[in-house]
Amino acid sequence: MPQHWFAERLLLVLSGLRPVHSMLGHTSAAAYDQLARLAPLAPLRSAAGVPGPLLERVGCARPSPGAIEAFARVSAGQRSRALAFRLERGTDLRWRCCAVELDGELEAVG
Image 1: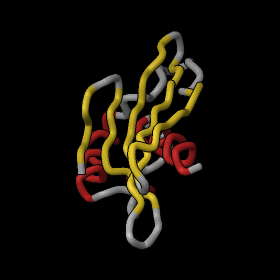
Image 2: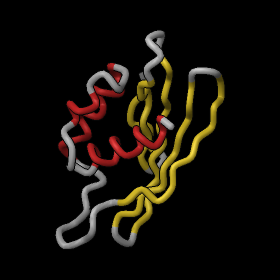
Image 3: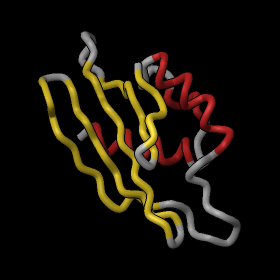
Image 4: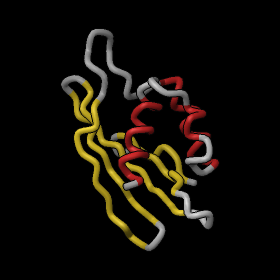
């Protein structure tokens, strides 16, 4: 399912373990721009000596054909974080991330 693939990639980018350019072609322009601004901040990066963040659960709803609204629970040390994102299927039949929210704050809408 595409939501699992995207959840893993977003986690890696937002934790600083994967470069943001790895999401090129997998995001809308607006979502990519926002990830490019967020990536240097690495909001999901673990503190030194603390295990890296883990995807605890990924789920989704399909509000319409060609759209997935997904969520992931991320554990980062003693803290749980919420990651939500919207995927849309393009005319080329590829899924792209169009919006990202972390802890309920809208990060990008494309």
